[in-house]
Length: 274
Ligand SMILES: Cc1cc2nc3c(=O)[nH]c(=O)nc-3n(C[C@H](O)[C@H](O)[C@H](O)COP(=O)(O)OP(=O)(O)OC[C@H]3O[C@@H](n4cnc5c(N)ncnc54)[C@H](O)[C@@H]3O)c2cc1C
Ligand code: FES
Image (cartoon, rainbow, N blue to C red; front, top):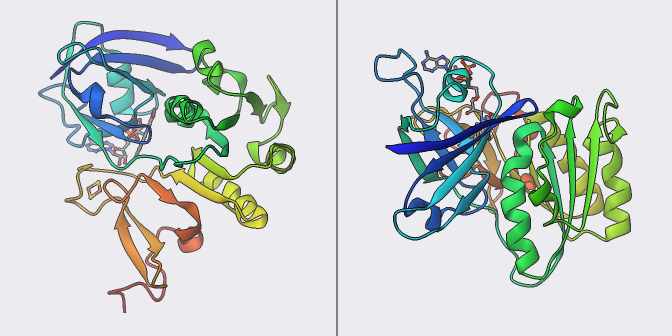
């Protein structure tokens, strides 16, 4: 059990901090946590997954882990209603992490809504490796942009887009990407957000011939590779499509390998399918 240390409303989201001990020293940008919601007598059986926003390794017993939660349905609303001091059943770190280049590169980080959360920790790691980091954050409206001041310090440039024009450039993240990619001569794109956004970013990455790693948000149940709820069609280097589990083979995947137009069905030619 992990103690909830802080729970603050920031715009449309809740910034939540947990005391997690040694977990903080092993979590990497891209990993997620699975949290049991609803309390002991709840019918909310399945854990909910949340991307790790940041961790603070402060020694064996004092590590902190932070997430950003959008109150949405029963599980996230229960979680965001919890008060500091409450013990929360939390498993972390789960999933894989963003791949970090060994040489300094020019990286573009693109986040949609709370999808910006894991990108700030990633930008800190990239900056420490000598990379140039540009960031683009988009949402439907200003309240749904999550861009804390200390996070902004870790990026070379920050561009914000909102669909209603309430802050930043009016439109979608994909409207501004081509110009930024050309101006900054981007080598790699990292993205996190809704599936439609990731697919649209991938089209641009393919057009510009840029490597693109994205963090997928498929529905998850167990979070540890047992239930197959989270499978996603991925084309391997051998050209064969396999249904991979986004909780253990992801959530970070090479966007170019995802069969984006599968429409939640098993695409023809998938290994093991008729
Ligand atoms: C890798 C990953 C990272 C994520 N990161 C974030 C993040 O950083 N911030 C964030 O806000 N969200 C994040 N999410 C989404 C989050 O996991 C939840 O889906 C979201 O909070 C909505 O959950 P909910 O319970 O509020 O909504 P609901 O719509 O009630 O439930 C969401 C899921 O739980 C199932 N469910 C509903 N009721 C029950 C029940 N009674 N018993 C069992 N299962 C039920 C639903 O079928 C649905 O799949 C992430 C998801 C993934 C997979
Ligand atoms: S969530 Fe159960 S296998 Fe991925």
